[in-house]
Image (tube, rainbow, N blue to C red; front, side, top):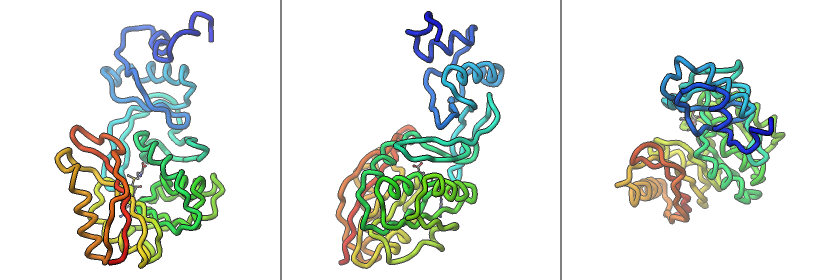
Amino acid sequence: LPKRDRKKSPYERIVNKIGKEIEIPNHWEKIGDTVILQEFKDWKKYGYEVGKAFAEVLKAKTVVIYHGTYGEFREPRITKIFGESTETIHIENGIKYKLDIAKIMFSSGNVDERIRMGKIDARDEIIVDLFAGIGYFTLPLAKSGRAKKIYACEKNPIAYRYLLENIELNQLENIIPLFGDNRNISPLKIADRVIMGYIHTEPFLGIGFKALKKEGGIIHYHNTITTEERDWKMENELKFYGEKYGFKISIISKRVVKSYAPHIWHVVIDARATPK
Ligand code: SAM
């Protein structure tokens, strides 16, 4: 860096580089070599200039504007303002996640949960990940958690393709990828642990309990709930479906993964299911 720039924050250097009065975001996400910005005033007019400055200062290849994540496959809507490819490899905790930022979500808000999954000692466990995506939780459980075997279900063909690539990239041999709707393809009565990393998850609790082995196990039940629902809704859902499939539920822990929207929370409950 030139001497005069050494004490400046990246944000100040980006502002300097642009050199004119444009309102730009003062925070960003970097996934692999791609920078993700929220919409800002005049992004349509000055997108390229701003994108170029961000790319140079943050040493990124591509800069995109993020407009939200939509639908069953949780697909992002983005506009590329600088650079060519939106495919990138993000490395987090020694795990490589390859993905196309334009087609696949990667939630930086879920980082703690990815780390937490990697800390589970899963050496003796058969795991079913019902919403594997590109391997968000499957890869840390397989690599750092050294799971005996993980069945990773994914319905979106693009995410599934990256899941296959990520298994190769991370040289993992304990993952069995399964393509299709988890309600049709999940193995049954087999799991010590079931991962349910989705945001409208209640309709899938039945398949979650069916995947558990008859001696029971642990379910990581994610869902999105309102502030009023925070103390009871997911607990009730777990108990209701647990009962239906012959399990008693005890709550091990509960944490907010992230704020999802105003007054809406992404929460995960770890629950132990034991046969009744
Ligand atoms: N837990 C992830 C994280 O940390 O960012 C997010 C996973 S993403 C929200 C959920 C994934 O589940 C998507 O890749 C979506 O395509 C997949 N999916 C949704 N419904 C499904 C179903 N019925 N069967 C299998 N996969 C499904």
